[in-house]
Image (cartoon, rainbow, N blue to C red; front, side):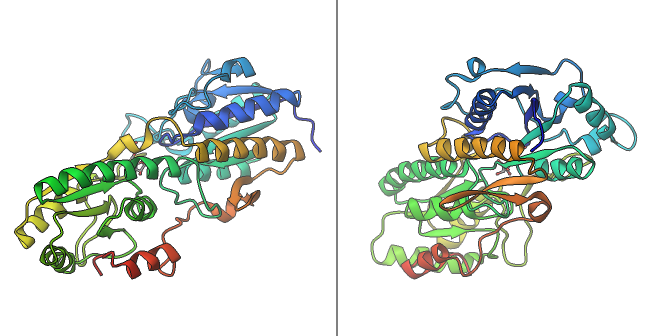
Length: 360
Ligand code: F6P
């Protein structure tokens, strides 16, 4: 077992409810084991720019369990291997500086809490000798090797509540309501919130949709007297023979931004069905607010396990939820992949059996 006296902790990528719960668990567990915790600000920026770190004690994390966001700040534009700057090639490699600063700060290990992008960066630093443990975070739930990421349950809960609210107004006006949810290239949020909210149509990136099939379903519902229909669309859903809707193309150091499919589906369905349609984008509301109790518990378990792995010297790993246990996975086995909804997933099959249309 290595002697670990001081560890760094950072949060990277988009925020997700539960980040603070992980930070709290890591800081308290480490402190009780005689390990000092250094909080690094705005992801890897805390290891690039001097003065962007601070000691965290249990006192600093008291009361943050239920808070959304992250007390450390985060960014999804801070990859040290391709840091966006204003030069002709647009990025600079700051990875040597990160490694130098890690040693200058006398850190023995690094807890990196993030999504696929941040974990891939963590793995790169791991292969360059930095003792790293990753913690998977994303509302999208698309990280390979873990059944759940914290943040997902909170996002689904929020989206379900939004769908419930839309039901009543849709019914009052005999409308079709189209709800666009997040999830990037995976349909987990759309599927779970769609089923939990009783949606009639769920469109996910894993299944190319055909609006004429959706139209048939909506008109059939009208025939038997339904006063409303709810369509849940994942932001990454793609029409058959068409393209994914983007608000911004990828550029140097930045990933593409998805969005707009809800409005497209709504206007096309309006024309095709002759019914009044409205669309709502839930957007970043899904990432805000207090984590659910499920996410608080999962985040706390992840934080505790991360410190356990560090104390045991099990580096290059990611904590993961393999119900009912929290286990360790090798980072190299999980990064660079996306966990999408499998076509034989029971919830997908159950939804289909219930009559939910996926546009295929
Ligand atoms: O990965 C989480 C996520 O919220 C996605 O669902 C969404 O596509 C993306 O982040 C939005 O990122 P940004 O914070 O850059 O708008």
